[in-house]
Image 1 (cartoon, rainbow, N blue to C red):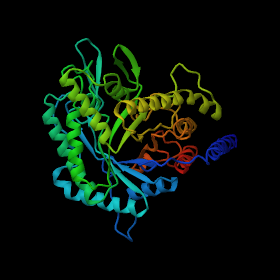
Image 2: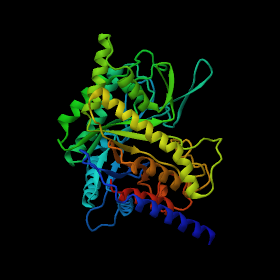
Image 3: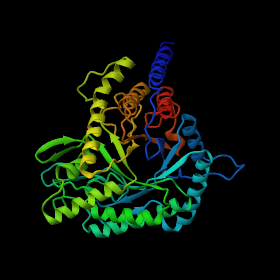
Image 4: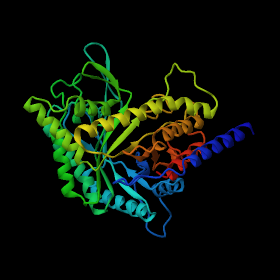
Length: 436
């Protein structure tokens, strides 16, 4: 009984907060407000939909759950692997022999999603894996330290060949996007070393390859409908960068700010070309995606036990991050002259004790089930980012719901999915219903 009363108090608090902001209206954004969720494949649990009149497949049932929460946008995430962080080849999970059937599966599911009155995004991603296909990819360095390789810090030995392979991977899903009139296509996600560079880790290419990305963007424009929104997704994490002698957290997003703002208008001709390419890429994107994985507390903190107090506590950090994003977006606009639009393409928290600390950790199955901590984290993010009505912010898509029903188990499930978790579902419903 005590648990039921606690939940009712929390839900009442959430509803009251949402009502207090109900009169906030949106400015006339050039891009639509986004209320979405990433829907992910895993193993044999693939995107597909049954023919009319046939029992629904698991992907359709997941879409139905998202619609019931108020989602209007579903992001599909094709997958590939890179088995050597210094290699040059992106290998799609689905083999060439299965390509025709994959196109048919995507068509069936996209038609179903569109039939529910929802829009679709396609977001090809890849993972750096060991030769046996497992990850994370850990490698001991000469100094004895352990390095974790991931898609954000790769160092291809032949960058031109890598971009050729990456383009071939994108081609598969550019075609699916075109054929099915998909509303959004993501050109790349969290490819930190390849976009703006990580000079302390890859000194050979300290500025990344913005010219290559600009070429990819122009290529995609020619392939897609004029109405398809093309984006690149920038991670916003706790990673610290050395920006001109000063350390600053924010991962790839902070490095974009440093490159565009602090290093604006370089005098060296080769650096000016690179900077101009990065500016053009930023300006020509239809919107910028943000993969928001910031810790809302530290392991040393004393975590409040009462829900409203916990939300207030978590907002200290989430407000800080919102202010950082707002300042960064305004600073970039001042330099580029472009009022760019951004929304979350990923942000999520596992339903475990203190899941708001290091939320980017992959699902390991560890942790004690705690849906209240998950709900409080989402509530704090909502209050910090949605409620203030930033003129650059357009909502978000959360991470994630699986096609695999075993990843949407509800009560007792310690993963990211909100399905079946009353407290978290109510928060997300209120976010999706929020009027900008």
